[in-house]
Length: 67
Image (cartoon, rainbow, N blue to C red):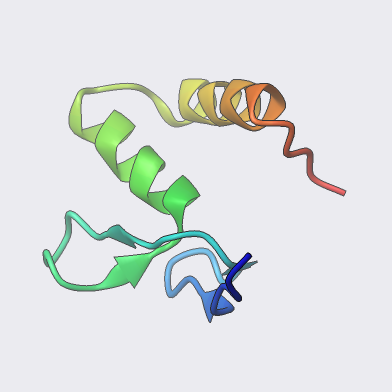
């Protein structure tokens, strides 16, 4: 198993180890996967409260729960 680089998301400030997403804002800033998902959902008109519920389901299905 390879070491994953620890990064800090410039949007939410959380640290993450997964592959970064590319911000839709400028097309070059690397952001955490959750903020990338939020930006994608926002782009198709999903309201913020539903975005969070979608992210909860994603994390649950992937076995990732916030501590």
